[in-house]
Image (cartoon, rainbow, N blue to C red; front, side, top):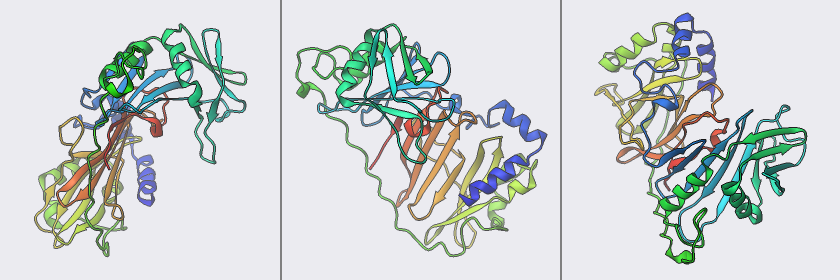
Length: 364
């Protein structure tokens, strides 16, 4: 967190060249400019105003968005015969929180039983009572209009594409014609639905001492790493802000490997790092690439940080400054190197908080 705060100060101090680059909304390498720069996900489909996404174990989500203002609806369904649907809704009231009970309305029917999130940092999000989920989904699939209400505030939600999204999920999960289907129910029993795929298991390497490493002020790269062509290019791409070039991170991965994070570019809300390894003596410099859901390894990570306690490297690529779209990925350092731990993405900027983005990849 200290490193990220330092980066925020440095980004704010960047000059006109950086601002112009940020306004362009894209990394010059075409790797991390936001949600639109990501590779297409074969398990994601858009149906008019709705988005449907499934992950590697078969859990699926369908998202609808507000036609005016900032609001959204998420219908979720895990894979397998025992799963049931869940619905979460959210919008951003003028005062930042729901001052009155939240309700949903589809055509002339009003749906109560929406429980708002609580807590000091609670987002303006509410969960539909499980007892009313199926009735609400059926109404949405057949309805013409939908709106969310909290006191005097109203947000209209488009229903154009919701039925097609739910039908796609039924097909993806093998629910068509079963009693568990979201949209195309039938007489086939729940036992006819295929089981969920197992989550891949990722085993982190043992933690090691970090003495001498970390986000230390005045830290420099080993000479051999500084001379690596990829690092030379990163230095050239960040010469608009010499202070940014000093934001170097390091961590001991194992007895023979040290991880180095090097700033390679920056915008108004995205810092792009390259990651490299050397021996503890600073020799044998190598650039790392990271596996992705799309299959193409990623060489540059956005808003990233490594936690030596968990051996997890996180990255959060904002599609825009609000942070309501983009990608969030995690990798674990294992005996085989960095392995993808989780990946989520929101390809549409619909005001959905990152905690509610659909997963693309999950693991144990």
